[in-house]
Length: 364
Image (cartoon, rainbow, N blue to C red):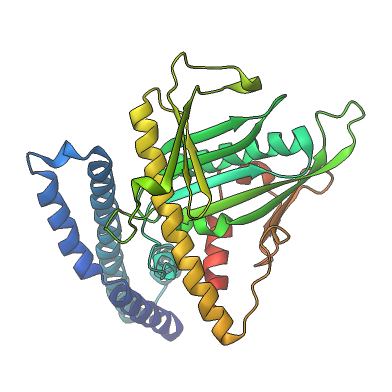
C-alpha cells in the first residue's frame, strides 16, 4: 500500500514539473487567443496561415485538455488509494495498481512534447528525398520513403503540398520536395535528416539478387518571411518550362513549371506540381527563402564550430538508418541503436518510436 501511495505521489510531482516546463496554462490562454483570431471576418484572406492557425488551435485544445484530464485522474487515484488503505486493500488495491500503470503510460505520452526544445521545432517543414546510388532500385526506394512520410503526415493530420517531383525513367522517383504544414512538423521530421539505406532482393533483377540502395532525406524548417532574408530581383534567374511526368513526358500544355536560381549562392529551386505558373513561382520563392535562411544558419554554426575547433564531417557518408527487407526483417537506427522487426508498420508511417528515441538521444 505504501509503495503505491509513494508511486502516485512521485507521478504527481513529475506531472506538475513537466506541466510547468511545457507552460500548459500559457497554452490555454494561447488557444483562446487563436480562437478569437479565427472569428475575424478576414481570417481566410491568407489561406496557408488560416490552416496553420486552425491546426494550432486544435492541437493546443487537445494538449491542454489531456493535461487537465490527467491531473483530475491522478487526484482521483490518490483519493481511491487513501480509501483502500482505510478498507485494508483487497480488490480495490489491485484495481488501483492497474490504474497507476495506465496513468503512468498516459503521462509518458504527454511528457514526449517536452523533448521539443529547438527554436524551429514548432514550424512547418520542407522535406526533400533524393535517390542515391542503386539505379532503378534507388529510385523505387525514394518513392517508398515518400509514401512512408505521406502516411506519417496523414496520421498527424498535416496538410501536404508536393512542390516538385522528378520521376524515374523506369520506376520510382529521382527526387521529390514536400511541404508539411502543421505544428511541430519540423520537430518530428528533423530526425529523418540523413542517408537511408535499403537492403533487399531486388524486384527489378531477373535473378532476384540482393541489392543495396540509398536515398538522401533533407529536412529544413519553413521560415516565415519576416524581412530577415532580403531577395533582390537582380539576384535571381527565373526559367519557365513545361511540367514533366513519368518517363519525361509533358503533363501540361503551358510553361507552368518554374525554376529559380539564386545567382549569389547557386541555390536552385524548382516547382512544377501546380497548374498555375504564378502558384509555382510563389511556392518556389517560399522554398528559396527557407533555403537561404537555412544557409545563413549553417554558415553561422560553421563559424562557431571553427572557433571551437570542431570539424563537421560530410553528411552523405553518414547513413542514419538501415532497412533490411530480407531474412530477419529489421529497421535499425544507427544513431540511437533503436530497432524493430515490424518493417511493414514503419514503411506505413509508424515512425514515432524512432523519432522519440532520436529526441532523447539529442538531449542526452
